[in-house]
Figure 1 (spheres, rainbow, N blue to C red):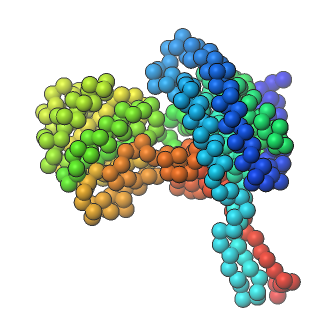
Figure 2 (cartoon, rainbow, N blue to C red):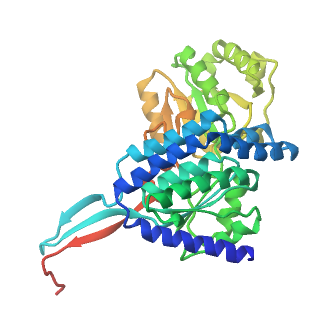
Length: 418
């Protein structure tokens, strides 16, 4: 069978799964998710063994440390996958919710009801946990998921999908609700993007190159974010002890993620007091510091930052540092170099905080909190399917509600149009 036929066949199977899910009750979906979580935990040893094959191959290919970190399944991450599925099972089911209803002069009632989108195609790199996260959210929201993971995680993803499909079938849910394109051929992505009328939405998760390729070639609507160039601005009215903890967490806790800080902006009024200790701490944690001229005067160990560096999503232990005149210059920098993903201000000044929230145009804008908190789980959405920087349909972490759309419903008593 050729790649085109294989991909279309998988997509048609997912379409059947989506139709079948329309009949699935909330209790049936929840029971399946809880059983899937148990099955992942029971199969942890097997999953780590299959993942080990992928990790070994990735090392042989010379993939970066950040990519290998994303690829690696540990017992902790498998526990997190299972916990995410349980959290989704515990969330309210958005399907069938009537979000608004009003009465017209002729007596009929008009409303909006949440319904599944249909078949959602997920194209992703490295992270096998996305397989479980995407499945749990799509299934709970009544959607079939068509998964196409990266070739570097093929063994991990096959193992996870096999477990999830087995549970789905045992719970009376059509196996097509969880469908995996199990070929490493790059052509499979291009064939997937042609399936308008079968696949309803594409969500790419990965590097900027992947997302641009998907967006440029898809005949299907795409929800996306190109990259996460995230900032923390340390204001002159900040609690500097808090600022140090926030910035350290935002850069070091897990640098290979889209919500990690890439540039730290510091008000010139506190730069000399704040920078030496925090940059020394970051350096000792393995962070390469790239600084503006003023930063290098205060911390001579820093390398020179180039203007183009401010546009980089490093996904690694590298940090740009710039001293700015004030909050206005910080916001101008974010508007010029940011990717509308996540930006934070650290300040005790209420009016500045409110201005920053209003004027910074990103999917999540924060006050006195780490950028790493822009996450569906941290926001109480359960496992997320991604963070959208689009402004149409969904923006920010995409949880259950963002995986539904609405349709109009009308309740009449014989009304006719005159």
